[in-house]
Image 1 (cartoon, rainbow, N blue to C red):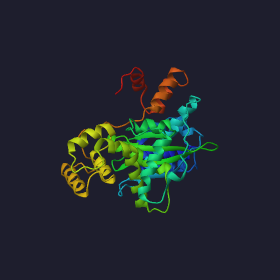
Image 2 (cartoon, rainbow, N blue to C red):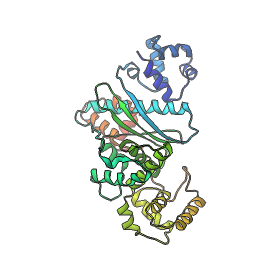
Image 3 (cartoon, rainbow, N blue to C red):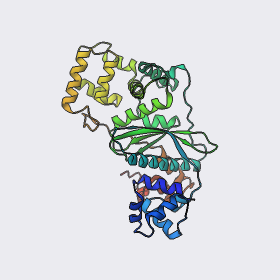
Image 4 (cartoon, one colour):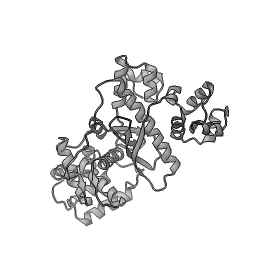
Amino acid sequence: MIGNRLKRAREALGFSLRELEAAIQAQVSAQAIGKYERDEMMPSSTILLALAKALQVSPEYLLSTREIELSGIDFRKAPHTGAKEIRAVEASVLDQVERYLALEELLPGVEQRWNAPSGQAFAIDHIEDAEPAADALRRLWKLGIDPIPSMAELLEDKGVKVIALDLPENVSGSKAFVQRPGRRDVPVIVVNKTHSGERQRFTLAHELAHLVLRLNGLSDAEQEKAADRFAGAFLMAQDMVLRLLGAHRTSISIGELAELKKLFKVSIASLVVRCAQLEIIPKAVYARLWSQIKDLGWNVRTANELGMLKPEIPQRMERLCFRAVAEGAVSEARAAELLSISVRELDRRLMGQMS
């Protein structure tokens, strides 16, 4: 039966039942589509093709019997984000992850398994405990104290599926687990494709905190603050920050911070907060720097901060698609469908002509 998949595909596009009726030129009514979603009726082959075209999926997708669900979804979003927007995001995530997992199944041996870190270091009773937890994870993953070149590549190497989607501006990202019968759960982190690289990297590190930390007895607000503290410490290791800036400073210029931004690939605002956390700068200097940042408009989410970084788009799924085509494991048409692009665009990318 196609009910769940039909509803998921509709919600992924943000369509209401009546909007989907209009998209298929009223070949059937919204009431009939509702019955398809409740598995009370099956559409004819003609209607199935029309629905698939309107929803930008293949008929095979709608007819698939693969069982897959999301659990533990946790969105970083503005308070006014609507329920319809959230349902659309959830449906898009599930669709994209399913494509990703289907691709891995075509290439035996490529799946990276997630091994959640264990130990007392990741049990958080206070917001400040997130700092040593970030250091512990860096040691566990043998990262040293150097800045992380690509958060997306690091997480995918550790078995986290990183998905970049066109999300509403007020949705930064989410974490979740994909559940499949008889298989291990797969962690997923979603980032907003339209956000800057700085914001994406912080979102990835923040959501990583929610995957690895055991937050004991903290309120929701405290949990978010602990995840932010972890993110800052993970992206800007304490020893490296102290080495570059010194233990105590009476003044730091925006220009110096802009140079450090290039190294750590974080926002200038995040660097100022980090300096305050490590007590490199006194409260008066922090207040002065923050006042400058506010005057420049860099304290808002949509800010065009000095030296903005390009979005950090995950590449692993596309690389696996290229490999599957090269090895004859999948047709170009199927590869294009998995990547949600046209065959022409796939051919361009296979030739190294990135858009």
